[in-house]
Image (cartoon, rainbow, N blue to C red; front, side):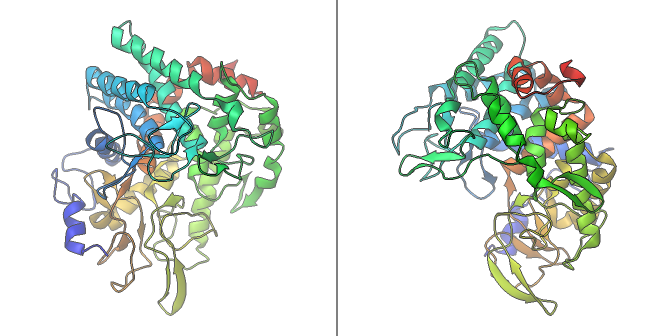
Amino acid sequence: MIDRRDFMRSSGLAVAGLALGGATRGSPDPILDIQRRTFDFFRDTTDTRTGLARDRWPTPSFASIAAMGFALTAWPIGVVNGWMTRGEARARTLACLEFLAAARQGPEATGVSGYKGFFYHFLDMQTGLRFARTELSTIDTTLLLGGVLFAQTWFGDDDAQERRIRALAEDLYRAVDWTWIVPRGTFVGMGWHPETGFIASDWDTYNEAMLLYVLALASPTHAVPPSAWTALTQRFDASWTDRYGQAYLHFPPLFGHQYSHMFVDFRGIRDPYIAGRGIDYFENTRRATYAQRGYAIANAGGFAGYGADCWGLTACDGPGDFTMAVGGRTREFFSYSARGPGDRDDGTIAPTAALGSIAFAPEIVVPAARAMQARYGRGIYARYGFRDSFNPTLTDPAAPLRHGAIVPGVGWVDGDHLGIDQGPILGGIENWRTGLIWNTMRRNPHIRRGLVLAGFAGGWLA
């Protein structure tokens, strides 16, 4: 269990002139303050020599390749907002891509960073090699490539370093052998272990893998056929639901609706499946966001804090894996887990769930962000923005916690920020404010080609 005094010291509550429960003193825009602090997380915790981005902070951790992808999107966001010079952004990006290009690949279980162009989910922060027995991850490689291709297009100057960035990004994308990791003949598999082979699950339903298939279809070297997208969408009907007044493709945690959308602007473009539903995938994510808010308003589980301005379930840290009586009711709590409406919901709210949807439904997300900051900010809002998660239902100091601490007047609060949850906050706010990532990726030829091969048409693809 973390000592509360240590937690408060590490939380950054006394740094940078933070007014507890609100924005930095003098800041006119709380949302911009959230974005700036989240950018600072990537700037301060990412290795400048290698681009390795920590999975979490301040707990010592390995690097997350998905967090590296989000970090690569962070640098141009910093430039356009005046938080970093273009030269600094260029140097960080080039260092990361040079590291990835030089990283050893091979079928060995140790001494490598990846295989067949894919990278292991977690890498050692010091060596950049596979961490423990983590898997070769197709979805985390996809999120890394999202950042790589964003950098490829954004750094478009006729400058030697920016030309090098574009060339390295192309080489990294072309190296990925998507056809190798289709072990059951149709769908891309979730991963591979050198010790045991392919993971027994595929990306074969509606979730965060839309970008994965766009990249796999568009590959100039190892493309999967367009029939893979057709087969995928043929399974989407099983996810179609009508909940809390919203008809949409359901995936319980909100990250499944947000990750691909951070890189691809799905507004106004449709494949045959979603056209048949009379909407686009952007609208689908907007509805999923409203459904989560509706679930919190209904609050059938009777959790503290849930309501119209306090909601958001996704994959995040939790207090721990235990069962205890709370307010005369036996409740089961979880540590890190993918949470959704009625699915492993233990009262743990993740600010990234709401803020990652700010570009889809700002009219409900902005009030939620401000309300969570005002109500719980002295415990959950720190040097790098919102802590990963908090649970107002769990207030007992005797709880057998695995993460975080009980903060009086707030409840359980996580002790960490997570890179893969910070990324959607930073990028989501920027897409809402300026459309930077979307507008940049619209110009990337690989993204456009993959969407067209998947059958998307209309809108900005026309």
